[in-house]
Image (tube, rainbow, N blue to C red; front, top):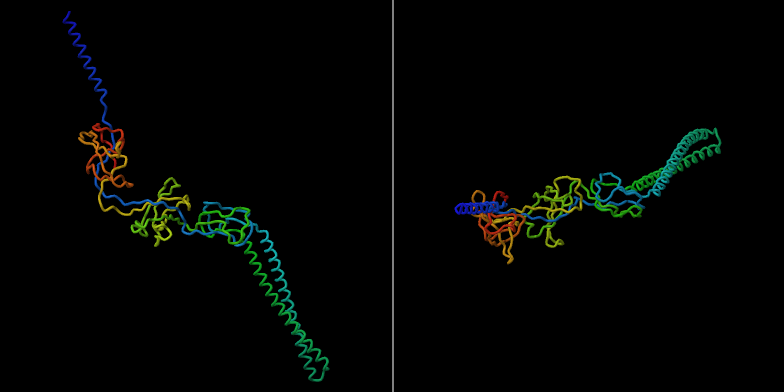
Length: 394
């Protein structure tokens, strides 16, 4: 019986040990999967981004050429308008009345000229008759067939008709002058009437509204500002230390913030020759090579300039790979003792240099070829097993 009890005790002990080992296997965690890069020395592109604003090739003030009260406005800020499109109108009643009076005066002058012309033709016919009659009487008088009083009367009639003809000729010339003046007055009044409509001189965008409906304006007072031309540009200002790196014709990319960061191709068209008045920067204009009616003057932009490459190779890592301890020391985790895609995380203190758009420059602490963990650094501990299946492009 004693032997049986001992056997049962041994069996229970062995069973308990087996259960503990099974639990240990269950508790053991799988290696943490991490993203990584392979550190390497490389040259980096020298790229800079500058803020700018969309502008047009030409911007002009639009104004009425006559004074009056604005009664209609058809265009508003941001509208795209076409050449010949009516943008606004003035109250034209006074100008219509002036044109109607000028028309009446013109018609009156035409009638007076026609009357003068008819009178002159009649006087000319009378002169011809009186001259013929005088020639007949003169011949008879020389032959003593008519009296001197008859001869003198015929000559007087001839002289009167000559004088009347001269008067009608002068009247006709005056009528012609009056007709020409009234014709010019009519044309001018019609022109003034047409000026009560503000017309777009070219295709473009309305960039500003200077006056509102029911306002009284004088001739030449700006009502709209319009950007003219089909092509748009963006303008920025480049520091004097970098202006030598860019040139006309150079291609750039332009990001338009208002259009959800959409990027367009651009080309440098103008580089300022002086920084005077620009705070040691030079104005640079870039023409957008793509047409998009959604882009409007005044929108903000970001222009990326490729200024070549740095001459010296350096090691760059993503900023996400970097962390610091309470003492402010920067560190990264590298993966060592890699076997079958699994290795151990090793903390390495690093000295960093410049922070660029491509990453953080590492001056010391890691070597080319090191496997650097780039994500979840704050969740990693020294010596932890990690799986390096997710490589990032460096």
